[in-house]
Length: 175
Image (cartoon, rainbow, N blue to C red; front, side, top):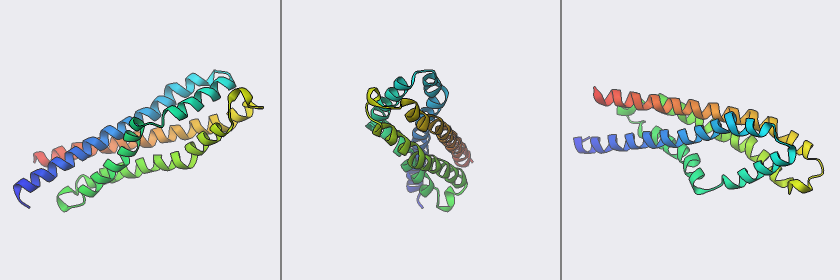
């Protein structure tokens, strides 16, 4: 590989690692904020308020900025893995693979647990017309909180792996 091509590949690898780290950090921060402030803050509200707020948040969060971080973390991390498959990138490969596994785990939790719970909460309808809001909240809150904490931990682990990958990449290119 020529020096120019090698330099271009290194720039792409660094950009991809940085983009993966930033987008994963955004997702980790979001789940952390829910775990440490949003859900504890809602814990003391009445059932109707809790349902109404969560329904509104679940609608508002589905926007381009959220999706950029949420899906961008998967895309950039997978790309970082692919770009570090060649022999000259192998030193960083275990850390990027660890990040991809952890982030994919958080997506699996989201898909299998949190989204169905959000959908069930939305299907309950207008909080003012719910016959048994205690039951609706009870079927949602504890399970959603528990699995959101798992997502926060998985995303934080992925972020840690990506930070380590950046350290390894910088150390490798400095030598």
